[in-house]
Length: 288
Image (cartoon, rainbow, N blue to C red; front, top):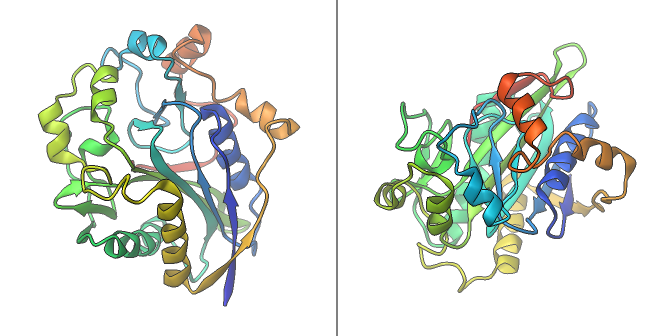
């Protein structure tokens, strides 16, 4: 039976969560045991895809008034509004037989665990192999399915994105992180995205609340079931590992690269005017 490392973090800030994901991928080496991280958020947080534009479609005034930080992920894709969601990250090596050689194979391999999770919740999930063109709202991850995405009743229930680093000679490593909404995020979305329409959102996305699962099943029981499904799917056992401390020097330094763009005007201008930052890793894959 294989081992995977398991990290379960308490609620943390957006910069902390993104810094930990970055460091887990940065420190991953050939032959290391895959990592499964479950984490949550101290407060509602809006994460943007790496190349997503900050434009008038995002209501920055509303974000500031509601104290919703705006951060930029190192992965591609569109905006995700986090808070009451199951957020995960998986870090592994491409070429590992568990994941396959390429990005698409890794997406499909990891999707098996989430398909089993939704099936055990009594749902009928379907795997979508190709992305749809266009979207009802240019910023919203959950308004359109991506590669190897899972739909329930034709609606998106999980959004994921990947980052790849390394080379063929030294090893290629991936981080895939994603979000499963627990309670209904639509009312808060409407206050953050100027062009979002409630009817459109409800036709395109689900939450575990809209499916009658949450809060009948609480976060703890859902996380336990998700861990069990990943373990069953990959034939593994968990080795618990402590997470990073917010006082760790590497985390403190890395957090500076994920500022709150709704309040840090200089960082906002810098990111608006450039598409590259030296710390960001080699390749990203659209998702979310």
